[in-house]
Image (tube, rainbow, N blue to C red; front, side):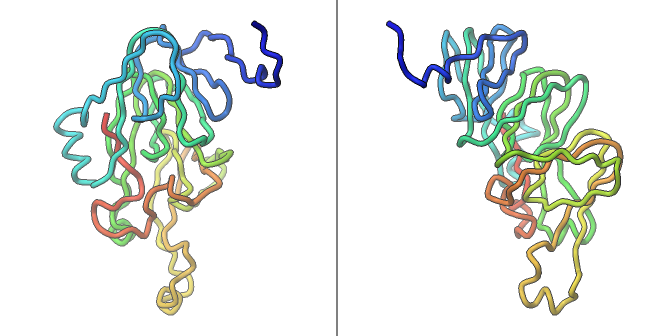
Length: 243
């Protein structure tokens, strides 16, 4: 029976020749014929076929200990089977990329899904006085060959670090590519009097240099974590994953 409605504009996009494909900018379609993948727990909104979803725990003792140390985590589920799976996260924009024997550093809360061929680990960011004052910042590295899908709170901007030293608010940074070095910078403009009055709200900044790109979202909201000014070793800005 034909459907006479403008809803037909939202029909399924035909399956392509890749594992990850955007149905629209807020909904990811994953074709299981290309293999298994890892997805953020609870991100499945629909599937067709015989897909299965399994919580694999913390991904081994080493990663479990790192998660306990950071005090944070984004649960991941292993997706296998046949058919097609549709995933999303709070209607945030989705960005898809393909890594070819490469590595990226990503804010854990922005990770939506990645091919099972991709390896992940938890990385502590920053050192020295700035790192200590920030209370411990943590990031997730994704390494290998395969697809990665991340979310952004609105349309992002990709900044070319090689064009010059780049600074960004830690709560707005989503990811950066290999070849980019990051250091934490403490903005003391205004001196102690400014800090005593509450500061500018931009106390900590990420300083990027090297050859590569930094992805920044137009938001400093909760997707970016608890903030660079968080306290305690486990209250880091960038979250770990358990998978």
